[in-house]
Length: 535
View 1: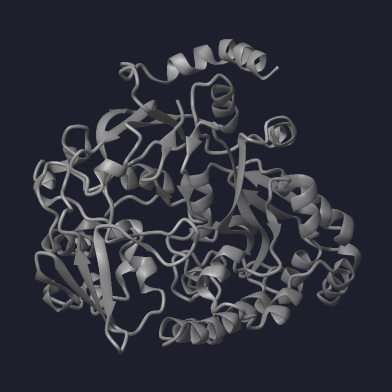
View 2 (view 1 turned 90 degrees about the horizontal axis):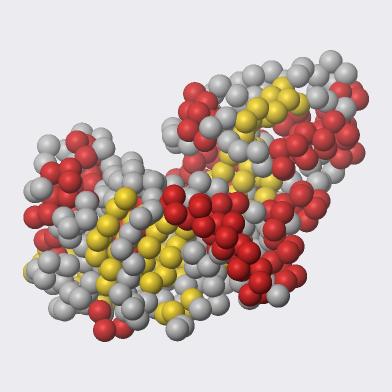
């Protein structure tokens, strides 16, 4: 039955795959894993890349001092074999592996890392994630132009194999930042080639693979790097990142045996795979909160009672179990479970009961709040617009819940992702469906998006108390102190309701049973070192 299914699917998908790319086949016996790639990378420079899709490729080609732990725990050693922390928590000393080399055979040195980080902080680089270095002494001041030279920033190469980093203040999560993508080094000699340095044959990295082909909008190919520090343990010869526009196309190619790992699964196919091919279906929670952002400067959304009513009218359990059905979880608070598990002391439940009580479904309370705001039974309520970036079925489900429970009409508008994001930044929306995508598993960073000056403060909300809680968390000397400050901030956020968390996202993907050792964390950070492929 299964063989027949694949044979028929192969005929259906052959035209699709032929259009995808033309590439010389790998030599017989070569171990090749083919991975679906949704978005074409705009850049493969760690300093200027911004999308997870770009770092999918970059992390195959290069590695930082540390790499994210797929299990969500403390980061794992990579280019650095070990590190030491001073007793006051301000100075981190990293010891590079003596066998670390670039793909051109040159040794990887402390100076390479320092040069790369200084490049990220240089304003002319326009690095979109320079804020991931702001724990470092004077890094923020240099980016802001308050320092004439970078010499005062807390980076030092003690010797070719030793790096010393001095912080502004102790940070219990600093190592997670060191493992983030922009901390990955670049080879300064390769950059001398100009803008073409990220092309095949010119890219020089220190990771397990080398960039060998890039056919725009088709595929990117990387092959095993013989100069890699741990090359003997890399057991896959080649990775192919094959471009697909949507879930349906990649699922057809998977059924045809043309790719080994997909990005997602069409919602309509989830039950089929769960029932008929559970060995191919994989699911993992993400540290991603999908939420509603309210434009608090537009009546009647400037009234907290209205915002709370819209939130309390939603049955989040029904939304995830009957509409999404992909392992998502109802968001009764803002911070996702993987995020709390990574940054909250074990066993702590700081403020959990108070926080979740602010989000539980309560249509009766929602109707009372709406009536108190002057819209009893929905009478006189203006026609608002709910906007999103794709045709997520949850948008229509929320629209129906508001009509049923509150008697109000909410229109739906779907825009391209970039247009939707620009509208949220500009405040050109009523209610916007948004997502909280993170670069590090840090609860403080997730909440800091709603501080007064944060670029992703889509509601354009201001609370002096909230800002103070976040500042206290950033300056906390222990994980327990940070967790307490974050709990207070989360409670303040949900009480004021500039946003309404809806669900915690999950990834569903298909993977051939031949593939083993696939590692990806709750932030989409991948590690390819332990991949294997059955014959």
